[in-house]
Length: 253
Image (cartoon, rainbow, N blue to C red; front, side):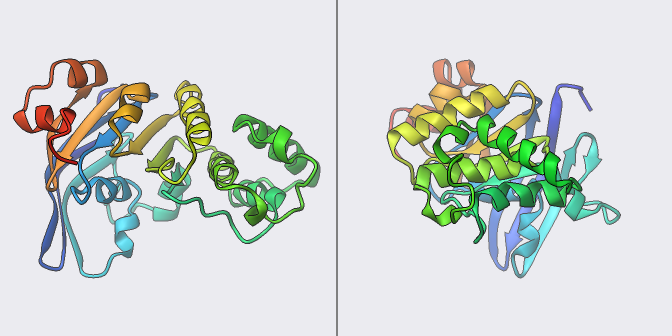
């Protein structure tokens, strides 16, 4: 494995019942970069993302062949601890999913599951992670309020902070700004750009403008296959495949 490669996917096929969702997918996720998975609705973007932390295990009647390597280790090896795998990855979904508890306890939960439980330490780290996502100033006077009392944009940043509290190596984000207003979306994008100095980010989106703003690397999917992948500047400025050219021109979405 190349030291610049965080995740390597080789010949991945995923079927759910009679549906062939992912077809001979091979790609590379480089370390400490933002990789954007682009493509029209229903092309397999989210399924590929979920396969990287084995959330596809939750599907019924699923059959997977091929390999996914994280840091050179096959994540589908029978001896792999799936819980440990998922601790390495923070997950953000389209709509934020704060736990049904206080703002403080949402972050504390992430700390506790990574083994850090001392009360004094807990307070300092909760503050640290809320500041990390630019949320501290907005909530420091109501940390015991329900997380559900926050705006959608604030909830999404809280979920990012909770994910960061387990000290992940990666953030897997499935259209995390699709339900947010422009200001909240911009806040999340800026935070991703800052965080890539220390970790790897994989972002699913169908929004070309967002991909142009933040992508270092792009994977373009269509009907379960990877059509084109590579550095963002090459992808947007010199697309090779006719399907890619059509997508960039807005011929389909």
